[in-house]
Amino acid sequence: MIIVSYDISDDKIRTKFSKFLEKYGHRIQYSVFEIENSRKLLNNIMCEVDNYYSKLFCEADSVYIFNMSASCEIKRYGYAKHEEEDLIFV
Image (cartoon, rainbow, N blue to C red; front, side):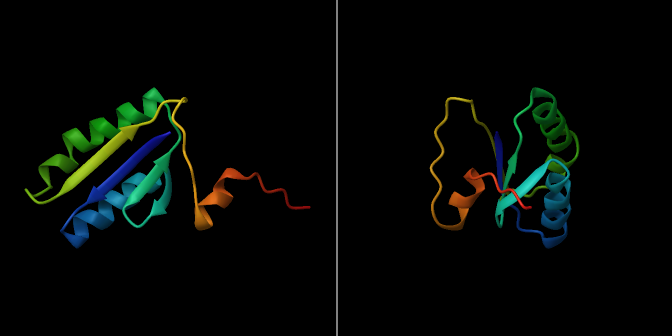
């Protein structure tokens, strides 16, 4: 999986960036997105950030992109622990 975390001070840019990330994955915290791991998706995201969004960021803004390997262990607590379970509705 790919984890993208951001802290962007400008409301308009932050909203635009979060809508951009919603095309690829889902929000797991207010400023954190989880995205299925794929080299193509990672390249698309990084290319868009490099070519467009990085020009809009101010010195105080930050974006982290974590490319998690299959061997990474993820431990979830609280509401997040239900994301590990497959739900079947009949």
